[in-house]
Image (cartoon, rainbow, N blue to C red; front, side, top):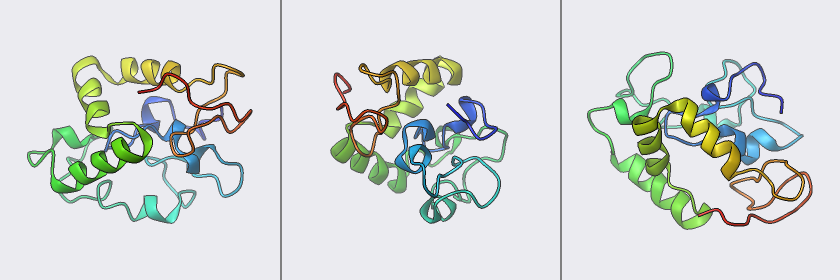
Length: 141
């Protein structure tokens, strides 16, 4: 898969969302280049993201919200609730796994977790199915 010059680890947003499974990253038209990419190839809401642009987010190469003294803040709790309810994914859970097991391990787990069982493509977290073949998400909790 084309990572637009970013490694798999750089495709994990500060909030714990894996850009590789995001609809904006996976789609063909007006494709987003990932939260951490530099430039204009991001969807409007990603550029304006209150979490990514948070004044409390520590400045370092691969910063994550768990590095903040205010973590988990109200914005993170709200995002986590929305993603757990609508998409069956916890961003706070993702951040815990990254913090406890490392970013490389997290991206390996995510690759297997979101891999389409039918064609090997990627299941889109926002659609719940593979954008390549249409197979539904199976066994993702």
